[in-house]
Length: 149
Image (cartoon, rainbow, N blue to C red; front, side):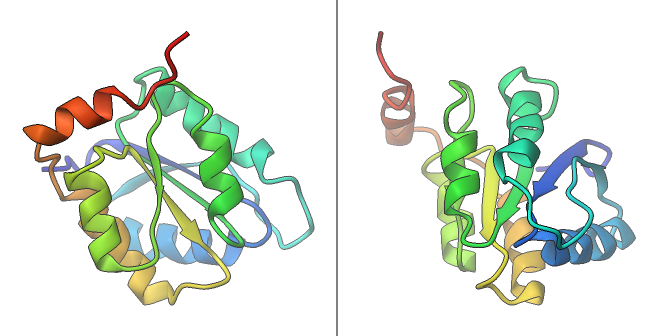
């Protein structure tokens, strides 16, 4: 189970800044702690600039879980998944948030800031953070994810 004393890095571009602010506000009131990597306005920015800092913390093992958001969630996930120890899953509903943890041992949830209801996003993040990896047959599959050089 997720320890609410852990800090969760969160980053978003202009397409996810409103959702990021909403998540931080609601989840902070529930006892979660965040390291907000930006952006802080709706001015157009390049999503990798705000996703790399989150992914780097996860990749280096300095944080266990992260949240990334861009307009579609796709670019954010693609960027984060360039790191060898990151498994970012794009989630649109509660079942995806649960399964991406249970079956894929995802450590970052990627959200589509322009396409998901904000209250649903809060629920997805809580499901994501509080769902354990099942292990078992899934360990073999997850271990095959990194590129073999």
